[in-house]
Length: 102
Image (cartoon, rainbow, N blue to C red; front, side, top):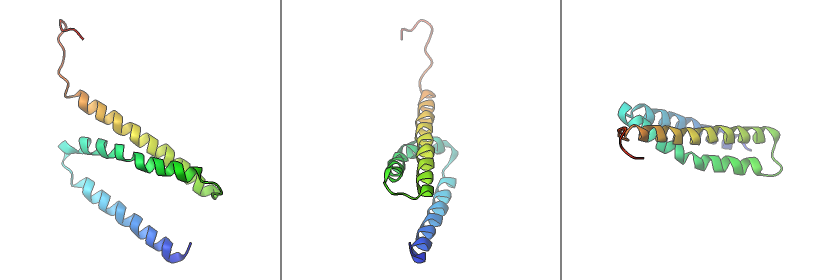
């Protein structure tokens, strides 16, 4: 890889981190959980990309390690997003009385 390509990719990464932090920090507390649980589900796209990179032949060892770490962290993020969504939706269910059938 050329130095200019690496600098360009690092610039995009830093800008994405900055913009993401700024956008998320401006979200009101009441909307934070539903918004984040929904966007964590979108993280599945990153998970698929990490699986593809991890499975490519003739990879350098450090790329394979980083890809496998991305698969592990992406899986945790997706599952966590669904767990948070399930708990959040559980708060909207009414309590049942003892004499009500299931």
